[in-house]
Length: 75
Image (cartoon, rainbow, N blue to C red; front, side, top):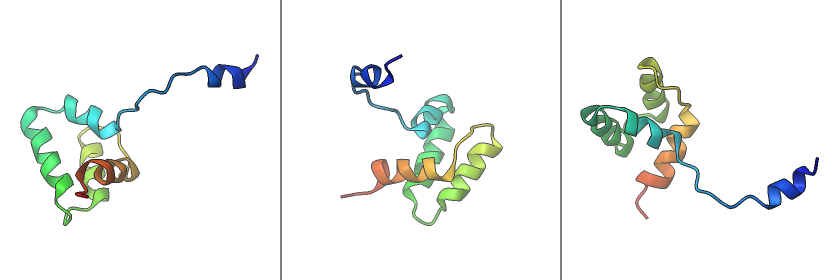
């Protein structure tokens, strides 16, 4: 088996953030509340992850932080 050749042939694809998937699964009003929390720097990343996990959405604080850095930080 030539794993290297197999890896070379793979086309680059964009990986979705785990949080993007969760936001599409949430009811619209709850997704809006999560987005507000994500943009509020007073809300801890770990708390967002904790609340989502408590509601059945498996996500780590790192995944939330990655989303915040890419999607919520103004340049």
